[in-house]
Length: 172
Image 1: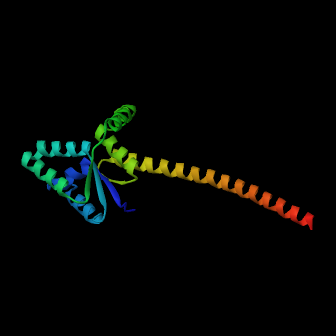
Image 2: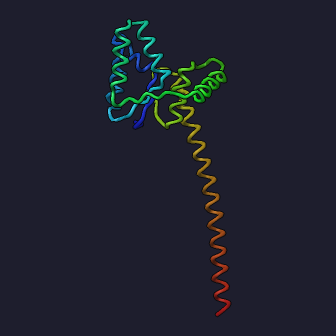
Image 3: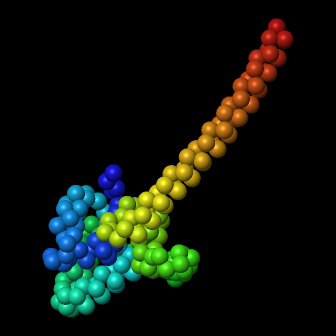
């Protein structure tokens, strides 16, 4: 499934920018595959990506990546507000250290926007699949509840309709 909106993770971006990275070719191919998508990147992931590139490849490489991200018309940088940051931190603390704050921010943004995720981090991909499944289960349950309500309402309406018809017949 190709999502029209994708959230980018630092694992993906770092692989994209680092030619020596084992996933570089895959990252380039994925971006081409999603050339009609809109990409979201959180401020947390932007900072993490630029930091890692700066440490591994130097400031010039980090600046080049930053400029590319900021100038790319397909990418929207999302700046979390204080309340969102607190939610992300609380979720991170509840996961008992299995995912970083940055990882949680990717899942948070994907959930909030209904977007897909481009990442090479298995924990993020597993988290996204789990959230998607939970969302589908919730949607199916809501659909079942609506169906029950609709059937009940239709039955009631039909009973009322039959009662009206019966009254009409009795009058004749």
